[in-house]
Length: 334
Image 1 (cartoon, helix red, strand yellow):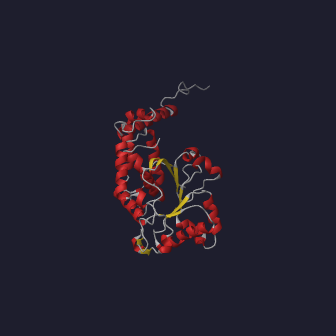
Image 2 (tube, helix red, strand yellow; image 1 turned 120 degrees about the vertical axis):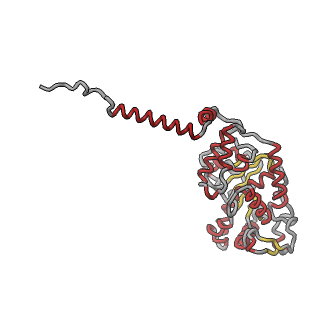
Image 3 (cartoon, one colour; image 1 turned 90 degrees about the vertical axis):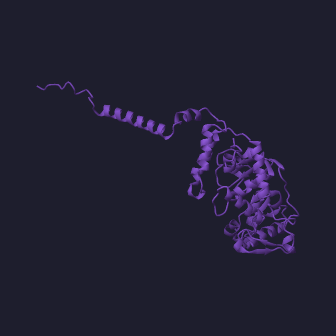
């Protein structure tokens, strides 16, 4: 005959009790860590879930400071930087007119897109020895034939367009449904031949007024246009009558390839205009952003176009938040 153990069905500091204690302790430690991490953690928690915040609220100031704390862009993962910009979208967008005008005035003095964005007959007379952006490449002599390739003067002037869109080719707009909004812009810049037809149109739109082409694309994908001229022409036709913009005077390597784009469109009777970045403008923009802490061997085509658009347009729609709107007091995109 066996005796029943009266404690057999009890959990006196057994597994379940210990598990419960462990969970409570873990929760308490986690809460303490969050409180110690920031004295205003609870305040920030409730502030975050109220919906869009005022631009100069505590949380928005903290988010902008997180971006300002990045001193060297190359030391931060691009995905992490984009994540910080996305978090900034909880802040209401508000145009600070005085700051925006001051910012544009500064750009006008340093860079002057309405005068020097493109190489023109006005800013680059015949017989000019045009210095390449990369100084080690030396100079390019502008003879009469090359001079005739340039427009007489800049086709765009300051604050000409009410709303502009700057769209890249990084794929961040996939499944965004932003195509309609982009198409509604008065002027659309696109970077480096991004796809816009078929399934992409819903997300990125189709309207294009200026599309940039990096000569490396022509060299790698189209064999310097020595043979594959028609395939390249077909690609450009996707953008209809959009002007084509190239950095012909960045280095010697870019020059002949960029000129071939002009010759190709003329040969095929295309109405599309071909423009070349003025190297002085590219150099001025690089120095401008370098002084503001952008540490990059060469700034991207996207940032160059955004910088130009800030002078040529009153408002800008961007495919992703950028430093200039989120940090320098101009507001964040809605």
